[in-house]
Image (cartoon, rainbow, N blue to C red; front, side, top):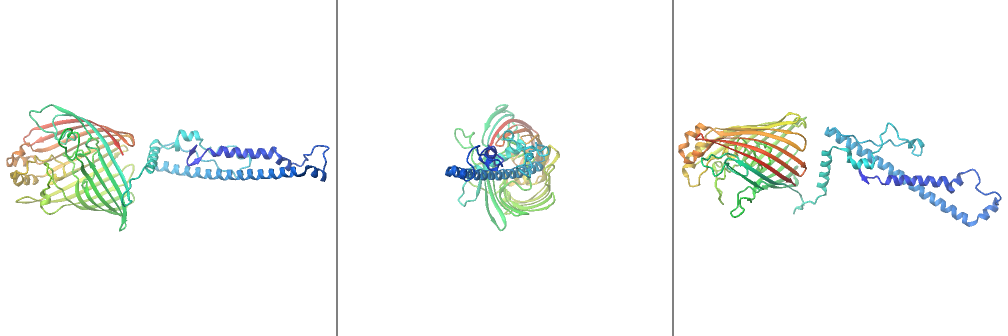
Length: 551
């Protein structure tokens, strides 16, 4: 049996060889040579006559005996050397395990340390176990509780070993490439009317609904990603990753509602130095880094239309970090290029209000972080400048944001974000406008500029309660909207504003369990409440079940 990198089966065999050697030396011809008495029977010839009588056969037997003794002596020497080497390995492994236990801070059963090597291995006293030195773990004990670590540490170690043993993806330039993702199945039941059956973000008001609810399932939120590690350039480590899902639309034809069109989620390129980084690509807005936890809402993050500025946006940013002990301070500055809301299917792309301004969105964020495994804290503040150009007017939007994540108890973490500003709807966070067809010049010339002048306010917060490494509860709430009185004043500009949502609220609670490192199960309830300009209020709810296979 092999444990701790040592073949335990060799020890009994070596000990048996040593006992055999001692037995041969004690009971065989070796004893005759060491004895002071003669081994010649009475009456036999002595002296030269005896030697002559023994003749050549006696000489041959003596030579054979010496050869056997030399071989046994060499075998004993090798056995002792192997035993000493194995003891050293056990001591080294014992020290490594103790360091791991001390680092993890988890209460586990300690591994018995190796017995001290006696100064004289041949001494009979060395055969008696010392009360001060604990005995070695037997092979049966090792098999019953490998390494005697916690179950989580043991599974993590096995996962890393399996990762090293798996087949690697080969790239043309021979750089490292890792494939990851999740195959996610969602089943859900909806009460009321919602804007999207798979991932509802707002409730829809209807005087004569087709039914009081719906039921369905989907795999369109399944995600696949590639992460590549590149060479070192100018002293920086380079890397890149890409993530895709199947939430880019629905194909035409039978089964189109159950299929999905592939969509880019994130595409990032990184250059990382010791204290600074440059990141470019389609990314989460760096001024809104926190993401609510939900496996029922991966394609569109939770609170997408009720307080979460989430919209993945092409951006370039520079990040600088300064550390002092456990404290880390970070400054980020960059530009973002939002493309606006895709209101209709089209093969062509037209400039939005920000793109028409011929300038990007400018943003800066500062944050303070405490890298504490028990009570980590992250607090950040951001500012934005958003230039916009319409057919007959320029508008300057702005935004002020705050984000936080910190532990409020040993098993409770609070995270969230808050924003206020104008022209932020390109990043989500509020109910989408009732966008009309492209030919409606009245809307884009009059109504939309008036909407962008309105103040927006919103935010969200989530309480995470991890029971252990496999189970957790999450509960959160969010709200986001525009100035309702201002919307009412411009309602007459366009008929589409009659159904425009002034404010949206959502609440969710979920339970997530990970029975294995590659399997996740979740149940979730979500409640939506949307307020229209016309004072009509729509409510809807969704209860869902998610099963995901991680790879």
